[in-house]
Amino acid sequence: MTFTSEHFQKRKFTKEQINAYFKNAERDLKIAGSNNTSEVIFTFTYQAFLKLGITLIAYKGYKIKSKQGYHVRTIQEFSDILSDESVGIYGEAMRRKRNIDLYAGGTLVTNKEAREYFKFTKSILEKVKQITS
Image 1 (cartoon, rainbow, N blue to C red):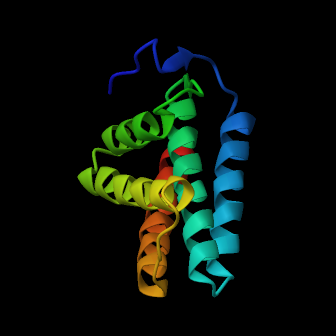
Image 2: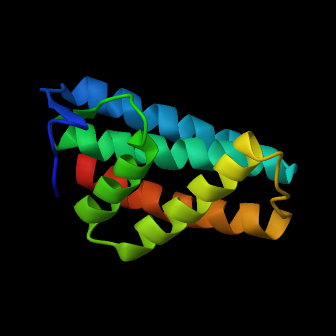
């Protein structure tokens, strides 16, 4: 883990604050899981994924600075904290899909892809819950 001052600010978080971050991620994942539209599933899954990363970063006593590249740094630190390379791989794939959709005129996220990202993020949610509980 490399919490550089360029991207992160040292900060103390209460258990309640960390729990609020987690509940916010859990809520987004619930929205994703209760929908049948692939774009909605994908968008809320990606948001939940990032919020889980933010939860763990806060648990470690840091706040990510909102600046260019902060999604990349969130994904990198999230992967490092969990010592799980697949977090970085899935996170980067979702980030790229989101960027293409947002900045390059859109991309089709299939229902199969959206469900795979959802399933992965749900498994990660359980790991984050165990760590932060």
